Image (cartoon, rainbow, N blue to C red; front, side):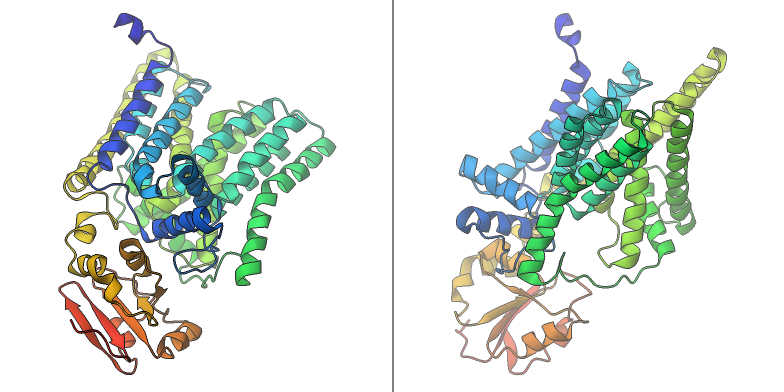
Length: 506
């Protein structure tokens, strides 16, 4: 036992193993969590594996999301001969364990490294509600966070040893991240900025390296965008203009940060100030390290720079283009950089105090960590209380997967829906997930073209789920304005309607 405790990296190994067990436990009841986005990834992976086609469950070109994650899932399908729903729990548990292990090894090389600091930081990552949510779901962020760590590692190596080889490796990792999530362009921006600010090359060579890094890292994304335009005449799908202001998006970003921290996220003022102050502090610390030439190329400083770049990108992009309100998932790439950047600042300034005062600084630091961990544990216990009995929230959760009348009917009787009829739903992903049938999404309120297609369809089914609340789509009342539409099957949590034709009797 004593020999085991002296094993090198034992803290990191234990934390990684604990992370694996937690994700396995979270997905034990009903499998991996599945959201609407997960269904798109899942269907695309199946189509790539079966037909080599980059299309989703409705045979639409996959453009709203980049291609790498479905390709990754289809590759695992090819190797294991299993469906993603079978291997995803173990796959995500392994990815989470790998994320923690790499994080622990990286923290061993922090400038102000200490054993107790590493143990607290590992505890923070392993029990993070944000990370546990990500790795309990079939989401591309599970791979993106892994590539983010690789990016920090290889950018650190390049900044220390700015060789042509290191430019290529860093650019390749960045390029893969860009075709995993479009937000991967924040890695390009971070890489370009830190390369230009690096100390070890003359300006002319810096510019050459920046150009080469940009070409390599953006080439994957450009190929993806070219594919998107060729098949859909759009670069990243139809994007609506934002309806939230710049200031509101700062608040929404801060809301997520306050949810991670022991702060009242319900307060507009607190959330707004938290986002603005944290981004400003991280930016000041980054530039201070640059101007004083102290640990500029360190892991902590790269994480600090990425936090600023990613935060600004999310706030600005949400001001220009409309997508879902900031959630822990959308902001998740900023979590580890926030923990590393923030804690490294505390450690740095703690060591700057005289030895007599350092004890008090340590006590205050431990109190801050204790509050942070208490907030995380509270959320973890609340999440586990529901997950252990009903499964991970989403389409595999019991209220959807087992207790829903309309879902049980569709799963058992979907063959009774007549062929030759189009299918529309306010949750098209759910229809595919439970039946394997393709289905059109109900028209968006603002899209005349989509509404013309729906109201002009003579023969169709409308599958309505009461549990889905997408305010961007036609309401049930609006959808029932269609001619000759009537109830075919009524359920306690939804209904199936038919328009024209001679429906089969119930």
